Length: 336
Image: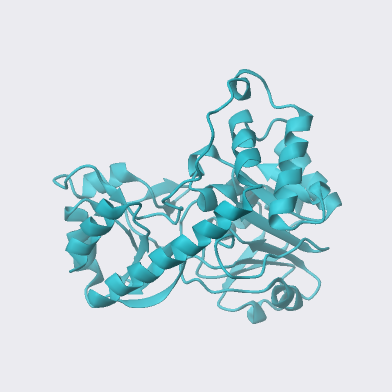
């Protein structure tokens, strides 16, 4: 789940893709608040604000096409990081968004249930490929669906679904489990099995979203089909180099999980003092209801701080984590 689009999330103040709105569009923020101070503090995405400290890029990663051996090493590193049985269960892709687009093209026309509200590109991608899509509030309501799609932890409410529960609800159908926010959470790391595809986001966890790197975990036969559909050289040399550097670093992931959990708790306290009520989230974002959500959105925007708003729930705002002390102080001044 590479972007942060959720149904109705905003108006003209987010990146639009096929009519779906996503966070991170500071050009839109500047149009909404032309007198806001620069630089903007962008809290409209759920990306780790403290990126992985990549080593200097080897020039050959830019000068030549990635080799099959490069890709194989990346898949081996990913299988170890995500606990997959082996690299034959791993598909490397230029971000999970392309996997969200590709999977529906590999399935005959089907009835698809998407647990929502959630990242809107899931339902849109299945609908674009000719499937019949319906939104359900709970996996238990997916009866009759041949495909069940869920995000866990979910964006924007942080709900968690286990692979076992989703598989039971799917009753033999295909389960697509998007675990884009799972790496820094104390949740089950799902493992591929027949009828289950797991999506994992590299960019969100490691704060390197611009690299465009993500993974699908699936049974080898389905993994090969997905990989074939993506075509050759789907992942760039720099992205492979970054993945090979970061994925084996389990100590950094543990430290990042602890630090971001502390940050999320700090943000909860600030939101509470501002009269907000936390309604969900993860270690990388917090979602809250406020007595005057639109008014707070405007106050934040006027101060050059961009958060996510929800057209269907005007009282609701979603905050990413500030990256440093100055940013925390800047947010605190407005929330006070």
